[in-house]
Amino acid sequence: MTVLIVGGDRLGNIPDVLYSNGFNEYIHWTGRKKGIRNKKIPSNTDVIIILYDYIGHNLTNIVRKQSKSMDIPCIFSKRSCSDLLCKLDRCVLCNKKCKNKL
Image 1 (cartoon, rainbow, N blue to C red):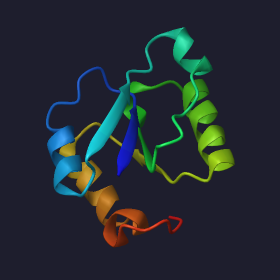
Image 2: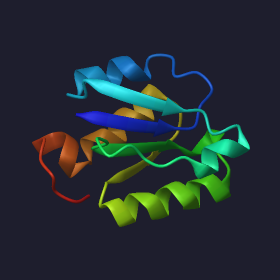
Image 3: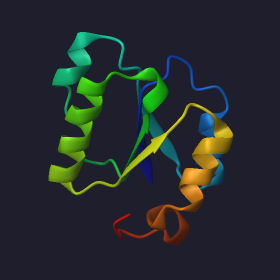
């Protein structure tokens, strides 16, 4: 499963948390440059994680609208492993490894 992470300059231990929860690949967009707003979500993305304490409202809205149109679940988390683990525990997709909605 592939996850797109939007926000956060450095991920720290977040990739380890993702690998331990069944994700085998991640794509990271820092969200700091204006050109990010024009990027399209890759078609092989299964889940989008938005690190909301490191991203602007405009980019958050753009990514959320794209995820809805592509029918991809979106998880909003702080850039901390404990908060991300808590959000992943509540995620239907991560618990069942299926295409269910959040």
